[in-house]
Image (cartoon, rainbow, N blue to C red):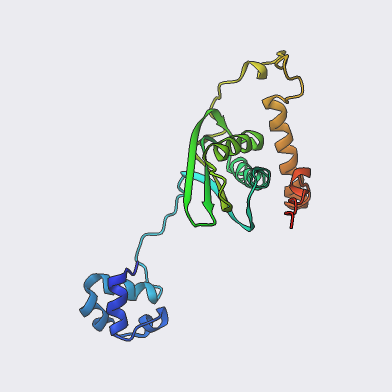
Length: 223
């Protein structure tokens, strides 16, 4: 909360750190920065008269991002990172008893340029596979082939898992999968898989089960 102008004023008073500000004479700081100076002095001394929130507010979104140890220069590497992030975001959604109706993917290039893209889902979900596939599709739409330094996934438009959800025809009891792809698991099976993985990780730790694709090492560049 200390902008450039306030910083310059404090610098003239030889106040360069939070500790300097905490030890400074409040009246002097307030004389130069008015009420904002008094607020800064109080914060530096750990004083805050704001009312404590006793009721937990609903989260507006749940997301996660990571800075890569090496820039991602191909789609496969970026997709593996998005899978890791999708697992984290979906697991947190399930733990909170929430589903998301919107997913966004964020990219920061090694040039520090940031871009993002979002889409509304056909139905609210907290399934890892759905969030992952959506994030990858968004990434493919906006990636301009520049090496990627950071990737992020954010879910929003949250709702309770208790709210009714419109089922796909293939999720109806007694239905069969699309004849063109009998290998694609139903939404119910995906939910059961996520629940089983959550249970194992809760008992034995987040690294107890790791997807095989996350164990693949990126290909080395030709020299």
